[in-house]
Amino acid sequence: MPDGKPAGVPCAQLLPDMRCAVFGRPERPAFCGGLKPSAEMCGESRQAALQWLARLEILTAPQAHA
Image 1 (cartoon, rainbow, N blue to C red):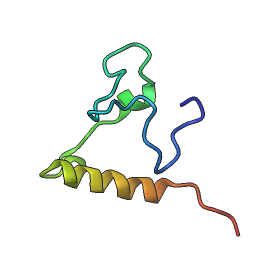
Image 2: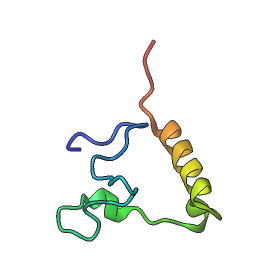
Image 3: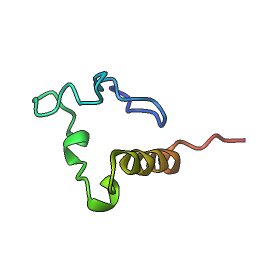
């Protein structure tokens, strides 16, 4: 996604089983490699992690101008 991934849009590299298609490959964007998951981010379950990421997407979404 050359212009970045908009909030609420799945990554173009996300496989149907929710794994990254370019993980560990040289073409993986530096941004992705820079993401360092923490215990807070991952939570106690996959659902908790997805909720944390959804909140992050909302907080970082571009704001519409009125």
